[in-house]
Image (cartoon, rainbow, N blue to C red):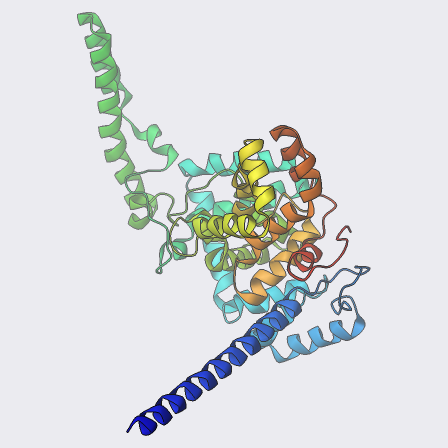
Length: 408
């Protein structure tokens, strides 16, 4: 009995060891496969990088492959093509294939309908959109020519009710009305109440009465205005898309102006890109900005703990305070436009925003030597804000695979 039991235990231990060995080999194979996928993902379309794989995106052969992708018109092939970078002359058509396939028939009608709504009524957010486009044009020399196109595109987005549908739709803001409601307010009633309160001697009562009368008359006249010329849905939600503009939103549109000359094409591609990816960059839940920030901090702290401690502890500069604008704008306005487009190629090809925090960590790693020598938070921040001469895809290669220099 003892010998039989011993043989059974020996066989059990041997089988367990065999399973462990097989599992370890399987994990190693999976790691190698993932590494190969990342390697193909980070092939850049810029030439002259040291110790890097031969660049395909600049070659005539790779351009011929792109021509075959456009001839077949298959979304999967277009996404796979973007994973390795896209030549500039093929990018408009490839992006349109990946983002807007099957929507060409209705896109033109939707665009003209939204343009008519822009001319028909004005919203509170229109002035915010115009101010943001003007601020971008005044502060960035790369995009100052596109102020009108960016403004027109965001005005259309504010009225696009398709954005308010679906599981990832933003929370609508109720009870807001167009800015022209004040033209229909009965000013005589409000003035009479204010004069009466002032004669009694209570200025606070006059102010409260004026505000109350403005609110009542605004709601009544606003409803009358919407029933006369506009739809009831737009009266309930302002803006109708449910997307409230914020500072820096113009940078989402500006890179697309280098790809498309027609304003209709710019809006069609931007609406699809915003619905699929960009809206997550100002969302707190799901795959939103919080997840990207957490990935950035954890990766930087795990890969470069000395740099993280030096910045956050010694200098008092939180790394996330510098990287947050990069992530929020998907590096638009931080990197040159052609580098932004190369980075967005990978976002579309891999259908993921996780490339953004990895690039942010790569920039910190590339500046590590100078950052460790910095003696003040202002000096370190100045080093990190100078990103004009950086190559985005080469930096990712350097961070993940240890390539050498990554200057353009």
